[in-house]
Length: 167
Image (cartoon, rainbow, N blue to C red; front, top):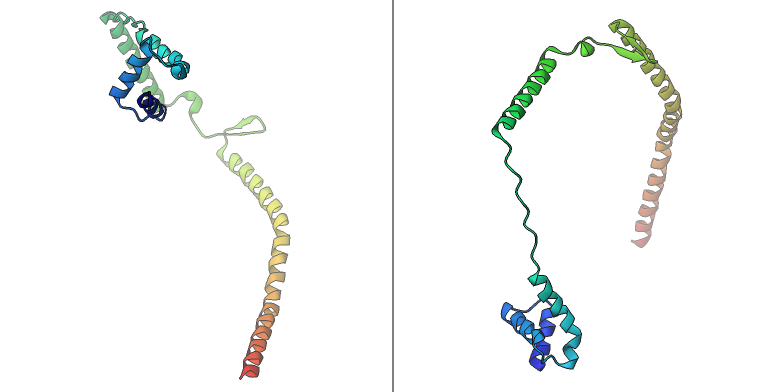
């Protein structure tokens, strides 16, 4: 009985060998299962039931006739040729440069450049106004550099005084 308890412990820790698992299967299949092991019997019975079940075999589909395969290959080739022709020669819808401004198509290259440049100038002006305070902060920061050096010099003087006092 103690031997079976050890095998059960090993089984639940995942450390059993195939032979030990077979011993457990035979034990729980028999009518001599101890009362303390009856709680595990349904577990091993479930394994036995699942092992006896079989899966339905999937029927293979019928092979397509050769004639259908030829049409599929021919259709694929025609589609590829049409796409290649559109890519090489271009569709009339995609020819020429244009821009869309406020929902209107503009085909004049120069006019599109002027509109784009005016938009860029507006953005530059907005950013210039927003960056003005940052330039002022940089000026203040540059002005404070000598004051920072004064603090460093004062610290050095104090260090020298302390060294002179110690000597």
